[in-house]
Image: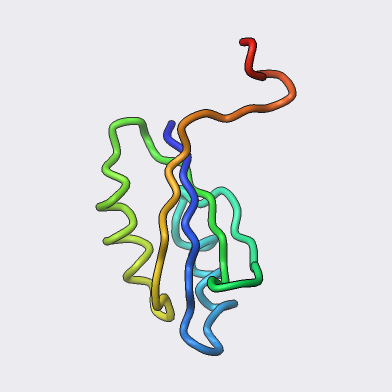
Length: 87
Protein backbone atom coordinates (compact mmCIF):
# COMPACT_ATOMS: atom_id res chain seq x y z
CA UNK A 1 0.00 0.00 0.00
CA UNK A 2 1.08 3.55 -0.70
CA UNK A 3 0.20 6.22 1.84
CA UNK A 4 -0.23 9.88 1.04
CA UNK A 5 -1.84 13.01 2.39
CA UNK A 6 -3.74 15.76 0.65
CA UNK A 7 -4.20 19.28 1.96
CA UNK A 8 -7.58 20.48 0.68
CA UNK A 9 -8.85 24.03 0.36
CA UNK A 10 -12.64 24.17 0.25
CA UNK A 11 -15.12 26.68 -1.07
CA UNK A 12 -16.52 28.87 1.69
CA UNK A 13 -19.06 27.01 3.78
CA UNK A 14 -18.28 23.61 2.21
CA UNK A 15 -15.61 22.16 4.53
CA UNK A 16 -17.91 19.78 6.40
CA UNK A 17 -19.58 18.67 3.16
CA UNK A 18 -16.21 17.87 1.58
CA UNK A 19 -15.02 16.02 4.70
CA UNK A 20 -18.20 13.92 4.72
CA UNK A 21 -17.86 13.13 1.02
CA UNK A 22 -14.25 12.00 1.46
CA UNK A 23 -15.15 9.67 4.33
CA UNK A 24 -18.46 8.40 2.94
CA UNK A 25 -17.57 7.84 -0.72
CA UNK A 26 -13.86 6.96 -0.94
CA UNK A 27 -12.78 3.64 0.57
CA UNK A 28 -9.15 4.78 0.24
CA UNK A 29 -9.72 7.50 2.88
CA UNK A 30 -8.05 6.70 6.20
CA UNK A 31 -8.59 9.94 8.14
CA UNK A 32 -9.77 13.50 7.53
CA UNK A 33 -8.83 16.34 9.87
CA UNK A 34 -9.95 19.95 9.86
CA UNK A 35 -6.85 22.14 10.14
CA UNK A 36 -5.88 25.78 10.47
CA UNK A 37 -3.80 27.71 7.98
CA UNK A 38 -3.90 27.96 4.20
CA UNK A 39 -5.95 24.75 3.82
CA UNK A 40 -9.16 23.59 5.47
CA UNK A 41 -8.66 19.80 5.57
CA UNK A 42 -5.83 17.29 5.76
CA UNK A 43 -6.85 13.87 4.47
CA UNK A 44 -4.86 10.64 4.63
CA UNK A 45 -5.29 8.00 1.91
CA UNK A 46 -3.93 4.54 1.14
CA UNK A 47 -3.97 3.00 -2.34
CA UNK A 48 -2.49 -0.14 -3.92
CA UNK A 49 1.23 0.04 -4.66
CA UNK A 50 0.58 0.13 -8.42
CA UNK A 51 -2.06 2.88 -8.24
CA UNK A 52 -1.54 6.17 -10.05
CA UNK A 53 -1.79 8.72 -7.23
CA UNK A 54 -2.03 11.67 -9.62
CA UNK A 55 -5.01 10.12 -11.39
CA UNK A 56 -6.64 9.29 -8.04
CA UNK A 57 -6.31 12.89 -6.87
CA UNK A 58 -7.51 14.28 -10.20
CA UNK A 59 -10.49 11.98 -10.69
CA UNK A 60 -11.64 11.15 -7.17
CA UNK A 61 -10.67 14.04 -4.89
CA UNK A 62 -10.59 17.18 -7.02
CA UNK A 63 -13.99 16.36 -8.52
CA UNK A 64 -15.77 16.41 -5.14
CA UNK A 65 -18.18 19.33 -4.99
CA UNK A 66 -16.73 22.10 -2.82
CA UNK A 67 -13.04 21.28 -3.38
CA UNK A 68 -11.23 24.44 -4.47
CA UNK A 69 -7.54 23.44 -4.37
CA UNK A 70 -5.30 20.55 -3.28
CA UNK A 71 -1.68 19.88 -2.37
CA UNK A 72 -0.52 16.26 -2.29
CA UNK A 73 2.21 14.93 -0.01
CA UNK A 74 3.49 11.45 -0.89
CA UNK A 75 4.96 9.37 1.96
CA UNK A 76 8.23 7.47 1.62
CA UNK A 77 8.54 5.71 5.00
CA UNK A 78 6.41 5.33 8.11
CA UNK A 79 8.26 5.46 11.41
CA UNK A 80 6.28 4.00 14.29
CA UNK A 81 7.02 2.65 17.76
CA UNK A 82 7.27 -0.87 16.37
CA UNK A 83 9.22 0.08 13.23
CA UNK A 84 11.86 2.73 13.85
CA UNK A 85 15.02 3.76 12.04
CA UNK A 86 16.98 0.62 12.97
CA UNK A 87 14.51 -1.88 11.48
